[in-house]
Length: 455
Image (cartoon, rainbow, N blue to C red; front, side, top):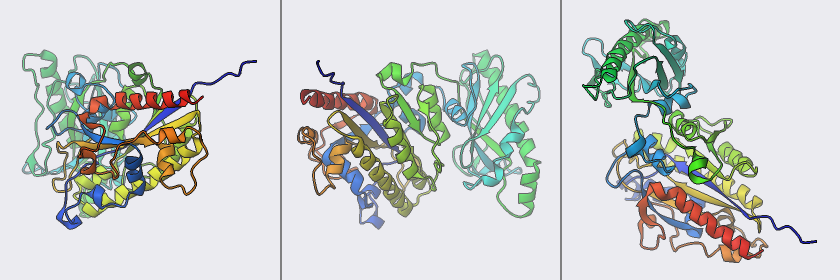
């Protein structure tokens, strides 16, 4: 009887650290946060694997997380992108048809006397205002009462808002001035010849005014105002978008995928591309998020036959960049490294002569502390096998006849940071993020070939 030899399985986990990249800082002896942080496991990925830099959307362009994730997943944002509102709203839990419009929204504060938005983010600790979303649901827009409004809390001070009705267009501007102490904007059509755009802009201005009226007179805000506490009287509407009609991630790449991401806008991209979303206990998308539980969940899912690609998103590093908190960014990177340790050790235990796991770590864009916003520098990326990473820490090597062959899949980079990943030793060089999944698939094939040749 001929023994059946099963096909080798090589699975991929992509750990995406939002806002990963940074610049050197005097307070860190002119090191970047990645260089200053104690990150032995991310460094081990670099030491045992291949490294490089990617340009998130295109060289020299500062981009948002939504367009960066589109590009990373292989969907051209320059051709397909029509606003982040649909991603945010779907990720917050609101179903969308292709004719609806949706906005990414901030609860904010505007000075009623001057019309100046003094706080675009009214309060990151917004637990006191979550229920306000319920009171905005099904509001009637003056003059447009036939339109249906749905509002769903997302995270921190953010929510998603959807409008359903006829003749709606995403070709409009938003009301968000994008910086504090700027005047509240009116919504305008981006195509002044398009009647649907003109109609939608008028509707949105009426919607913005009605939301402002409701919030200004809400009991929660009146009480907080009387106590001298931050309160919200405005919802900033930005990134108007409609749901994208595109092929799924599996149809595009041939990979059955899952996503671990509590952050609404990222969940929305996963939903758009047909990725399976999973909840993780303690995962909040903020500073207090339980990353260790995310790592454990990823291990459990990758052990199942139904998935061969996982995506694990970490938000807090980006928040530290926006908050211009240098030490907190270093601390959050070290917190990520602790989760990577759990991930590597768990996947190493699953690894054998027929099962291997690629661990890839990168960011979606840079969020330097000095600027507190996204900038255009390329982002470092590293990828290696969990078994090779773990071997960096093992005193006794795992008894596996193919391990010696697998150890040769590496370059000469030894540390994971912006400087080392840009060196001539980095095998990946500098490339467009759109090629990230195809690069991982090439590595997947290389490892499969090694496993098959050893059977």
